[in-house]
Image (tube, rainbow, N blue to C red; front, side):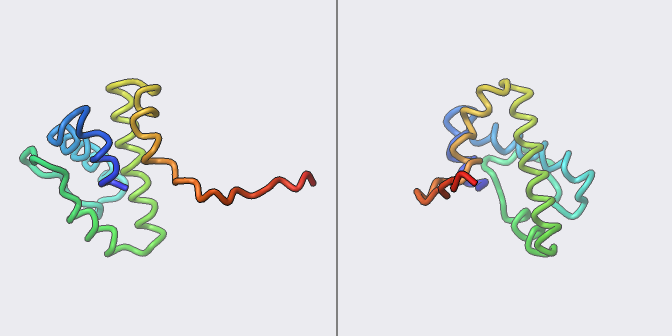
Length: 110
């Protein structure tokens, strides 16, 4: 999902902008999930997800899901504070919503 965010956002804020926003999100998320990783002291050129992948893999699935979700929510909130909710939703809509399989459940009317 993070690679999709990167692809969607890079034309708008550039790779360094994505990396900076991700780093800030990581820093803020670390308060509640200290194991999630450490943002780089230097501004990286691109988004490096290797440490995040390792940190998530080292946790149980429930805790990894909580930490990963918190990181994504933090990223979303930071972006929203910068560009507003309408533009944030437009930018991340395709990334955050799972693609439709075309097999939507029918309402039985009961």
